[in-house]
Image 1 (cartoon, rainbow, N blue to C red):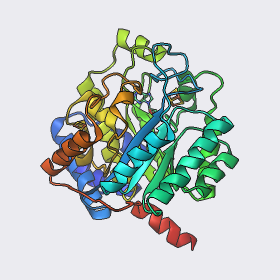
Image 2 (cartoon, protein in one colour):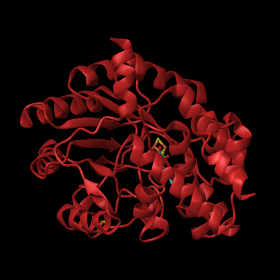
Image 3 (cartoon, rainbow, N blue to C red):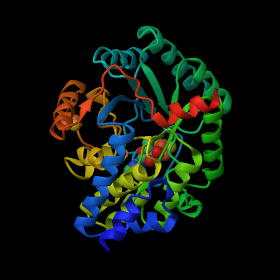
Image 4 (cartoon, protein in one colour):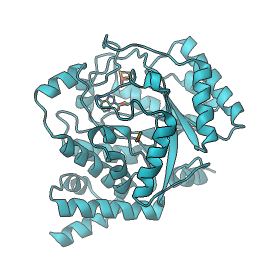
Length: 366
Ligand code: 5AD
Ligand code: SF4
Ligand code: FES
């Protein structure tokens, strides 16, 4: 048994789907510990022990979509909708720049109207100008047309996060109303790569009716898509959503079990994909106070400190239990610095932190 696990863990990119499932299903503490240790070794070898910060600005919770799991879905009337002004967003970006963060992430609900598109475009130009092109900018603004994505790229965005949510078509359909389409989401990922964005994708882990075979397929999907970054986290209930309400009546796992599944996903993804950037997402910390440190120890290397103004933070809750709602960006940053130092890792300030995977892909293209 022991040798079998060692043999599997050393297969790395050659793991089969059956191997991935086997690793995701590990249940005894000792084996899980060895899985994390191997993932950590792979991380040290390919991306080192540096953590890259991406300052997350959640600038609006207005969304045209109605995903069954998400707290800011259009149909949730209990949410007070907001949109930060351009000067407010610029102040947050400037703060990140002054602190030496390599980049910021602009995230919001999904909107495709021209007013929104040009608002974002203008912000991008302003951030580039304010930082003399130094601050990297990632967008996480949902599905958009090719022409919109072209405009935003031209204005200075160079990375884009668009989670596929799950690579299982049937599960995808069950989580979204009929106006969502798996294939158009996939097509958007392709357009992003075509346009030259560094593309990130990811899934929710531990969704109702999601199997370990689905999760193994998700990891294989990441490889097929040849993405530079992975941002994935546990599914966490939001009680004012159809899925969250249903799930809270019949929970399928404890928080600790849900967290363990997410950490195993991070570890197996690191072992299989090796040199990509993997985020230790906030949802991990929603389940357990040290969730994000545990994500780094299981193979993740990116943290997205929330730098949104406290007055808006509580209106941007995709799931219940979002941490740091009352902590401002300065406090949260200091707290994260302490957490990261506590596990012997270092923060890489003043660096974009592109994944080695993306860089080697670029070289091949040249
Ligand atoms: N639990 C965990 N993640 C969620 N997201 C939305 N709702 C939830 C939830 N209840 C994630 C989705 C989306 C990202 C912005 O937030 O994966 O892509
Ligand atoms: Fe909107 Fe994104 Fe939430 Fe879906 S997951 S409702 S697109 S913010
Ligand atoms: Fe935000 Fe601790 S991580 S205050």
